[in-house]
Length: 311
Image (cartoon, rainbow, N blue to C red; front, side):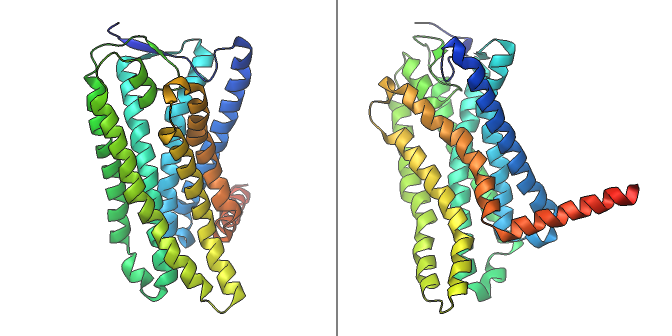
């Protein structure tokens, strides 16, 4: 049993020959994630045609995707370049807190986006009145504040852990479960809080996200025009794809039994949550969204004309 001042993050693999391939893979994923989400955020900020509630929430999603990728892939990238995988105790706890908050935030933002799509398709005549700037601001602020408050109890409990059996964290970043497995303190309260969070999102965020789609699909099926049905379905399919990917990955990671003996498989699921989903989000939304593609063409044309004007 040791009182720690720092931890050593094991990483995805401890095999020396795999360190360079893992670094290159993480670097490529990170660059794609940052560039894709940054493009989405800049397009929504610069193009007045995208100043709508749907793209306002998409910009929020881009910000948190860039943040979650940075906070989790940081140890892989910096650890390889510096040769050290050591992280201070305070830095580890901070990373754990921010990551847990961002996961909860993403689930809440996706719920807000579902509500927006419900109003747009099921109540189109009242859309501008219901989803006004004030409502969108309150929804987004509520999501951010709730997510960061919800993670505080877990963090406070971890801070009270008095000793650890090891300083080696079998993960590629400081997540709450690997920390729980190496402490020699009583973890029953933390187990209760984790279960409470899972049940909250399972019985609150999950219904809030998927229930609107019951009404959306029913409304779409009543549309007489095939073109109209296809247009509305494409509007929602991008968001629904992201929701399904994230919920499936999180449920497999946090609800599967015997995690202490299967941390290696848990790391792969975490890699999907922290790297693949944020990387896929801008690709899914841009490839399936005509408005985003048109806005990108518009901004590129403005940039090109501006450069020619300077010449």
